[in-house]
Length: 259
Image (cartoon, rainbow, N blue to C red; front, side):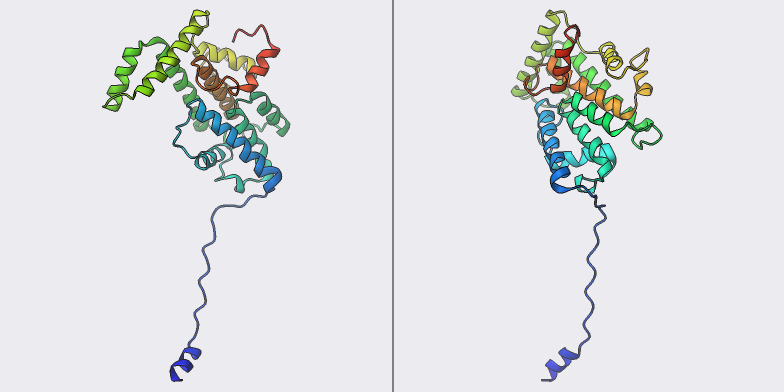
Protein backbone atom coordinates (compact mmCIF):
# COMPACT_ATOMS: atom_id res chain seq x y z
CA UNK A 1 0.00 0.00 0.00
CA UNK A 2 2.82 2.37 0.88
CA UNK A 3 4.40 1.74 -2.45
CA UNK A 4 1.16 2.47 -4.28
CA UNK A 5 0.58 5.66 -2.24
CA UNK A 6 4.12 6.90 -2.94
CA UNK A 7 3.67 6.14 -6.61
CA UNK A 8 0.38 8.01 -6.68
CA UNK A 9 1.88 11.04 -4.90
CA UNK A 10 4.97 11.12 -7.14
CA UNK A 11 5.10 14.26 -9.21
CA UNK A 12 4.71 13.46 -12.87
CA UNK A 13 7.16 15.25 -15.17
CA UNK A 14 5.56 17.00 -18.09
CA UNK A 15 6.16 15.29 -21.41
CA UNK A 16 8.83 16.89 -23.54
CA UNK A 17 7.55 18.81 -26.44
CA UNK A 18 8.15 17.03 -29.72
CA UNK A 19 10.68 18.76 -31.91
CA UNK A 20 8.95 20.97 -34.38
CA UNK A 21 9.79 20.40 -38.03
CA UNK A 22 12.01 23.08 -39.51
CA UNK A 23 10.67 22.41 -43.01
CA UNK A 24 8.34 25.26 -44.02
CA UNK A 25 4.82 24.31 -45.01
CA UNK A 26 3.35 25.65 -48.20
CA UNK A 27 -0.23 26.33 -49.20
CA UNK A 28 -0.69 24.28 -52.38
CA UNK A 29 -3.79 22.17 -52.79
CA UNK A 30 -2.78 18.46 -52.70
CA UNK A 31 -5.02 17.38 -55.60
CA UNK A 32 -5.27 20.45 -57.80
CA UNK A 33 -1.66 21.68 -57.53
CA UNK A 34 0.73 19.18 -55.94
CA UNK A 35 -0.49 16.11 -57.85
CA UNK A 36 0.00 17.73 -61.31
CA UNK A 37 3.51 18.77 -60.22
CA UNK A 38 4.34 15.21 -59.18
CA UNK A 39 3.09 13.89 -62.53
CA UNK A 40 5.08 16.51 -64.45
CA UNK A 41 8.17 15.75 -62.37
CA UNK A 42 7.80 12.02 -63.05
CA UNK A 43 7.55 12.64 -66.81
CA UNK A 44 10.66 14.85 -66.70
CA UNK A 45 12.53 12.34 -64.57
CA UNK A 46 11.77 9.52 -67.00
CA UNK A 47 12.97 11.59 -69.96
CA UNK A 48 16.18 12.61 -68.17
CA UNK A 49 16.89 8.98 -67.22
CA UNK A 50 16.15 7.83 -70.77
CA UNK A 51 18.44 10.40 -72.35
CA UNK A 52 21.23 9.66 -69.89
CA UNK A 53 21.29 13.13 -68.35
CA UNK A 54 21.00 11.71 -64.84
CA UNK A 55 22.28 8.44 -63.42
CA UNK A 56 19.74 5.62 -63.26
CA UNK A 57 20.63 5.07 -59.60
CA UNK A 58 19.29 8.53 -58.69
CA UNK A 59 15.97 8.18 -56.89
CA UNK A 60 12.92 10.08 -58.13
CA UNK A 61 12.12 11.73 -54.79
CA UNK A 62 15.70 12.88 -54.28
CA UNK A 63 15.94 14.25 -57.82
CA UNK A 64 12.57 16.02 -57.55
CA UNK A 65 13.54 17.76 -54.32
CA UNK A 66 16.83 18.88 -55.83
CA UNK A 67 15.02 20.39 -58.82
CA UNK A 68 12.54 22.26 -56.61
CA UNK A 69 15.42 23.63 -54.54
CA UNK A 70 17.19 24.73 -57.71
CA UNK A 71 14.15 26.56 -59.06
CA UNK A 72 12.65 28.29 -56.01
CA UNK A 73 15.05 27.49 -53.16
CA UNK A 74 12.57 25.35 -51.21
CA UNK A 75 13.09 21.79 -49.96
CA UNK A 76 10.14 20.12 -51.67
CA UNK A 77 6.67 20.38 -53.17
CA UNK A 78 4.89 20.60 -49.83
CA UNK A 79 6.88 23.75 -49.02
CA UNK A 80 5.71 25.61 -52.13
CA UNK A 81 3.41 28.62 -52.14
CA UNK A 82 0.90 29.44 -54.86
CA UNK A 83 3.32 31.81 -56.60
CA UNK A 84 5.89 28.99 -56.85
CA UNK A 85 3.64 26.62 -58.79
CA UNK A 86 4.09 28.00 -62.29
CA UNK A 87 7.91 28.37 -62.23
CA UNK A 88 8.29 24.82 -60.90
CA UNK A 89 5.80 23.38 -63.40
CA UNK A 90 7.53 25.21 -66.27
CA UNK A 91 10.88 23.82 -65.12
CA UNK A 92 9.64 20.22 -65.18
CA UNK A 93 8.00 20.78 -68.57
CA UNK A 94 11.31 22.02 -69.99
CA UNK A 95 13.12 18.96 -68.63
CA UNK A 96 10.48 16.78 -70.30
CA UNK A 97 11.19 18.45 -73.64
CA UNK A 98 7.96 20.46 -73.68
CA UNK A 99 9.61 23.80 -74.34
CA UNK A 100 6.56 25.47 -75.90
CA UNK A 101 4.28 24.63 -72.96
CA UNK A 102 6.93 25.74 -70.49
CA UNK A 103 7.50 29.04 -72.27
CA UNK A 104 3.76 29.75 -72.48
CA UNK A 105 3.34 29.03 -68.78
CA UNK A 106 6.33 31.19 -67.96
CA UNK A 107 4.88 34.09 -69.95
CA UNK A 108 1.47 33.78 -68.24
CA UNK A 109 3.11 33.90 -64.84
CA UNK A 110 4.88 37.13 -65.68
CA UNK A 111 8.65 37.13 -66.06
CA UNK A 112 10.39 38.56 -63.04
CA UNK A 113 13.08 41.16 -63.43
CA UNK A 114 16.66 40.20 -62.67
CA UNK A 115 16.55 42.24 -59.47
CA UNK A 116 13.37 40.57 -58.20
CA UNK A 117 14.37 36.99 -59.02
CA UNK A 118 16.70 35.63 -56.35
CA UNK A 119 17.93 32.93 -58.73
CA UNK A 120 19.26 35.46 -61.24
CA UNK A 121 22.69 35.73 -59.68
CA UNK A 122 25.98 35.57 -61.53
CA UNK A 123 26.84 32.36 -59.68
CA UNK A 124 23.61 30.54 -60.61
CA UNK A 125 23.71 31.69 -64.22
CA UNK A 126 27.33 30.67 -64.54
CA UNK A 127 26.55 27.20 -63.15
CA UNK A 128 23.91 26.61 -65.84
CA UNK A 129 26.17 28.07 -68.53
CA UNK A 130 28.97 25.69 -67.53
CA UNK A 131 26.57 22.73 -67.87
CA UNK A 132 25.85 23.84 -71.44
CA UNK A 133 29.56 24.18 -72.21
CA UNK A 134 30.29 20.73 -70.79
CA UNK A 135 27.52 19.16 -72.87
CA UNK A 136 28.95 20.77 -76.01
CA UNK A 137 32.48 19.61 -75.15
CA UNK A 138 31.35 16.04 -74.57
CA UNK A 139 29.40 15.98 -77.82
CA UNK A 140 32.36 17.42 -79.75
CA UNK A 141 34.74 14.92 -78.16
CA UNK A 142 32.51 12.00 -79.13
CA UNK A 143 32.12 13.30 -82.69
CA UNK A 144 35.80 14.03 -83.35
CA UNK A 145 37.61 11.29 -81.42
CA UNK A 146 38.17 7.73 -82.72
CA UNK A 147 36.27 5.05 -80.80
CA UNK A 148 39.51 3.29 -79.84
CA UNK A 149 40.80 6.49 -78.21
CA UNK A 150 37.52 7.08 -76.37
CA UNK A 151 37.67 3.57 -74.91
CA UNK A 152 41.32 4.04 -73.94
CA UNK A 153 40.51 7.34 -72.22
CA UNK A 154 37.67 5.68 -70.34
CA UNK A 155 39.96 2.86 -69.18
CA UNK A 156 42.51 5.39 -67.94
CA UNK A 157 39.84 7.32 -66.06
CA UNK A 158 38.33 4.27 -64.37
CA UNK A 159 41.62 2.42 -63.88
CA UNK A 160 39.94 -0.80 -64.92
CA UNK A 161 38.15 -2.69 -67.67
CA UNK A 162 35.51 -0.84 -69.63
CA UNK A 163 32.05 -2.55 -69.60
CA UNK A 164 31.02 -3.91 -72.98
CA UNK A 165 27.57 -2.31 -72.61
CA UNK A 166 29.22 1.12 -72.29
CA UNK A 167 31.37 0.49 -75.39
CA UNK A 168 28.32 -0.59 -77.38
CA UNK A 169 26.43 2.53 -76.29
CA UNK A 170 29.31 4.80 -77.32
CA UNK A 171 29.57 3.09 -80.70
CA UNK A 172 25.86 3.57 -81.37
CA UNK A 173 26.06 7.24 -80.42
CA UNK A 174 29.09 7.76 -82.66
CA UNK A 175 27.33 6.07 -85.59
CA UNK A 176 24.29 8.30 -85.13
CA UNK A 177 26.49 11.41 -85.17
CA UNK A 178 28.28 10.17 -88.30
CA UNK A 179 24.94 9.64 -90.08
CA UNK A 180 23.92 13.22 -89.30
CA UNK A 181 27.28 14.48 -90.53
CA UNK A 182 26.84 12.49 -93.74
CA UNK A 183 23.58 14.38 -94.20
CA UNK A 184 25.63 17.61 -94.00
CA UNK A 185 24.60 18.37 -90.46
CA UNK A 186 27.55 19.54 -88.40
CA UNK A 187 28.01 18.71 -84.74
CA UNK A 188 26.19 20.85 -82.20
CA UNK A 189 28.69 23.44 -81.02
CA UNK A 190 28.95 27.00 -79.77
CA UNK A 191 27.93 28.61 -83.08
CA UNK A 192 24.85 26.37 -83.26
CA UNK A 193 23.92 27.21 -79.66
CA UNK A 194 24.33 30.94 -80.31
CA UNK A 195 21.90 30.76 -83.25
CA UNK A 196 19.40 28.79 -81.18
CA UNK A 197 19.57 31.36 -78.38
CA UNK A 198 19.08 34.24 -80.80
CA UNK A 199 15.99 32.63 -82.30
CA UNK A 200 14.57 31.37 -79.03
CA UNK A 201 15.03 34.52 -76.93
CA UNK A 202 15.65 37.25 -79.56
CA UNK A 203 18.85 38.08 -77.74
CA UNK A 204 21.55 40.28 -79.30
CA UNK A 205 24.79 38.45 -78.54
CA UNK A 206 27.88 38.54 -80.73
CA UNK A 207 29.56 35.45 -79.24
CA UNK A 208 28.64 32.27 -77.41
CA UNK A 209 30.36 33.48 -74.23
CA UNK A 210 28.23 36.64 -74.27
CA UNK A 211 25.13 34.52 -73.63
CA UNK A 212 26.25 34.11 -70.03
CA UNK A 213 25.54 37.80 -69.39
CA UNK A 214 22.82 38.41 -71.97
CA UNK A 215 20.44 35.69 -70.74
CA UNK A 216 18.92 35.48 -67.29
CA UNK A 217 18.92 32.32 -65.19
CA UNK A 218 15.55 31.09 -66.47
CA UNK A 219 16.52 31.62 -70.11
CA UNK A 220 19.83 29.82 -69.63
CA UNK A 221 17.98 26.91 -68.03
CA UNK A 222 15.68 26.77 -71.05
CA UNK A 223 18.65 26.89 -73.42
CA UNK A 224 20.32 24.09 -71.46
CA UNK A 225 17.24 21.90 -71.85
CA UNK A 226 17.03 22.60 -75.58
CA UNK A 227 20.70 21.91 -76.29
CA UNK A 228 20.86 18.73 -74.19
CA UNK A 229 17.75 17.38 -75.90
CA UNK A 230 19.06 18.19 -79.36
CA UNK A 231 22.40 16.58 -78.60
CA UNK A 232 20.52 13.50 -77.44
CA UNK A 233 18.66 13.48 -80.76
CA UNK A 234 21.91 13.77 -82.75
CA UNK A 235 23.43 10.92 -80.75
CA UNK A 236 20.35 8.74 -81.04
CA UNK A 237 19.83 8.62 -77.29
CA UNK A 238 16.34 8.10 -75.88
CA UNK A 239 13.01 7.59 -77.60
CA UNK A 240 12.21 9.72 -80.68
CA UNK A 241 8.52 9.61 -79.73
CA UNK A 242 9.02 11.30 -76.36
CA UNK A 243 12.23 13.31 -76.80
CA UNK A 244 11.81 17.07 -77.06
CA UNK A 245 8.14 17.15 -77.98
CA UNK A 246 7.95 20.92 -77.86
CA UNK A 247 10.81 21.38 -80.29
CA UNK A 248 9.29 18.92 -82.78
CA UNK A 249 6.06 20.88 -82.76
CA UNK A 250 7.98 24.10 -83.34
CA UNK A 251 9.95 22.50 -86.18
CA UNK A 252 6.68 21.43 -87.86
CA UNK A 253 5.64 25.06 -87.95
CA UNK A 254 9.03 26.15 -89.35
CA UNK A 255 9.81 23.90 -92.35
CA UNK A 256 12.73 26.12 -93.35
CA UNK A 257 14.45 25.71 -89.97
CA UNK A 258 17.91 24.20 -90.74
CA UNK A 259 18.02 22.57 -87.31
